[in-house]
Length: 492
Image 1 (cartoon, rainbow, N blue to C red):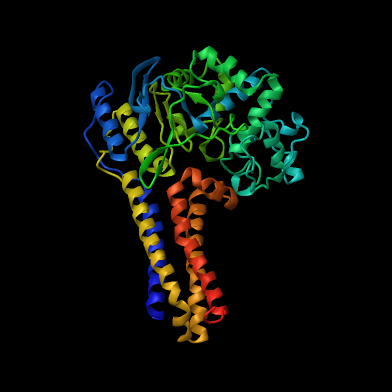
Image 2: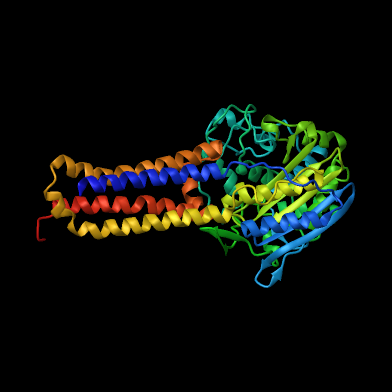
């Protein structure tokens, strides 16, 4: 019986490790050829999007396509909530796409001579501090814009409450340790853009939301966009997933989040923004400043945009808990597209919306798209996680039932075997947790910090969080019960 129990525990460990490996294999991109389409054949685009929607069970999608200064296609698919159709004019959260607006606001203030990109932040915010006093004096506005400040999530083990105001969030950076030399390494850091938004406020004398509205959104005619989500009551319902099935969830909107995320827009409004960006934002900043915006720093990141292939492609996007945004620009061809999805599970950000985005990009550029039948389905992945979670739950239930006779069985064991049996109840779940978290750390790199990751997992990947708990906690509990049974007297 003891040997069988050990085999069962080792099988559980193997089972869990296999799951982890499967998840990361599923996240790898798949590439395959398909029929070539042309920009004017919008029925082919509709078919490709609808096929991806069905494959992944995406609730709603809005798309706009730009050719030159014209929006040549706008369409909504699916639903924006119960009995509410999705349209290109539906408001949605745009996540980190907000950074391109924040960077543009900073660039405007630099154009006016109010800010200098290469001046240390302390010149504008004297009390600004990070954990390293010398670094506090060296971090410039430019370093924050292109994520080369040396700060990262890995060095900032602080979980801010949702009602933390921007100034308090900036002051919390006194707990941030540098994880790279200043100006040398790209490390995507959301709180850096929180600092930039606060810098816009103190430099302009306006709230960040008012500044962005007055100086960017109104000039571009973005009438259904805002940096104040509280003023947008008709936002689409966002969705997460649980074991492959969609469920509605409120999108968190921390008070300090507008500069890095939290902005609200529509596919139609972002098309106006994309046209302006393809035209070097000429109505908003000087040509010289636009060149600064599109000058890549470390990691091919400029000011709020990734720049690749020497500017052939400029893009950003946003990945919220319940929404996904993609804005891709191809300035030399005068092409662009906007893609918004009201689905935000992490598996979607790395699987379904990647396939969807690549399909739309292929259509816009006249390339061979990836067929919908190629690549993993997020539903399959979620179902797989659910089946494994159920299997582990059944196994643990069986083991708990067998605990009733554990003391009697343990009496026939040597002390060494009893210690080994108890030890495995703690060792195996610990190994599982270490493997899971080490893989997550390897995947996210400088964006990983243990405590914030654990706090965020129930929102960004709830089913995997449940799986992690089911794989670990019952074993720990069984180990504790075994110790209690061992120490208690027979018949007690």
